[in-house]
Length: 497
Image 1 (cartoon, helix red, strand yellow):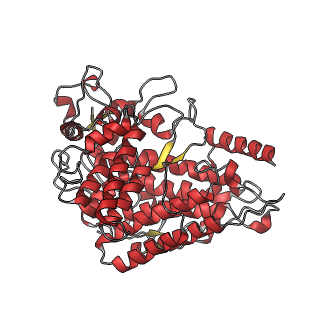
Image 2 (spheres, helix red, strand yellow):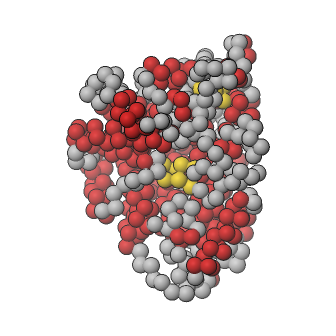
């Protein structure tokens, strides 16, 4: 059986790496004879890694002022003037449904009667990833298709469900799937399909999947902290405690076998790092550190700036203001710092989905809010561990000792005892830790809490967006799409705000 699994894994990776249009094909015409869950599941994982780790992450880095520009090319210009229309980053909405969810739904709804093999182990894993994505769809858009989504020809015009209703349903699903993972009965036999050989996240480790489900759920519950639902939040966290799996204990990554070959590189590295020939990409050259973030990190003696950003070709570390008047400022790409070596490491690098440091920060905030026992002392320990993990992830030399030196300084939002608002300290440090890896989360957290405080706005802008607009494709093809205007991106915050 091991030989069969290895051959199957090779086929999966070949499909993924050749960039065959699996999701478009699956979306409309997939049948049990054209694929199966063991082939489709890693395709969904890999599309999620590309969408979340590259497209959404890049957008988030501009929204929280981590990145700026060197010259205002058309796509970059929209970011620098907050030109939020129904075509602005519309691939986030479209690809979520057309690529990621179509593949995950295929696995979840797979008709076991059509096969002699048992694919039951793949269902809870696909449901966890679907929950992960729906959290972000609600956070970024509000009401979205949920209960009628993914029915293909059975319903071409799905209704848009209420955002809070979706959130509560997703939380329930995470509770159920965590328990399923922990109690799943792996019946060994000729008909059982083990996900371990094709799962490009956890290698089929059901305990780690349960921890991931718990951590997503904790993030969603903390998102509700402004909604006067503390009893509900605490009750749901009690369910996490009851299953006993805990939260993630290491970074959650996707890697289907990235290679330094065309269409086979890590998606973030391919877009914002180097081509297969070693040349920096156009997006790398166009993207610079923001002046604010570099100056802030240097002012608090945070050595992570040397890993988050590159040294300029002409020497030193320099960022630029978020403005469309870049050609008039008097510098070139060689004068500026770009995305750093702690983020663009190699074509083969893992694509992070959720960092361990984020989990630690989430637990620290939950303790400060009284949702998890432990109080200030335990929260401080988690806070310090999260900073250490961030230093380690970015590859800072002598990372743990450097982190300890860093957070021992008498600086607000760095040193725990020196920080009068502990939640602000947690959110500020989480913003730094998620720079370049999951900055879409930082944008959403900024909307929720206002932290980190003091972030600038692009030149000429007076307000920061709080959501995206529905894709123009959805507006044209689904008459159930709610009416929207460009002002909604600034004035219609998520329900949990």
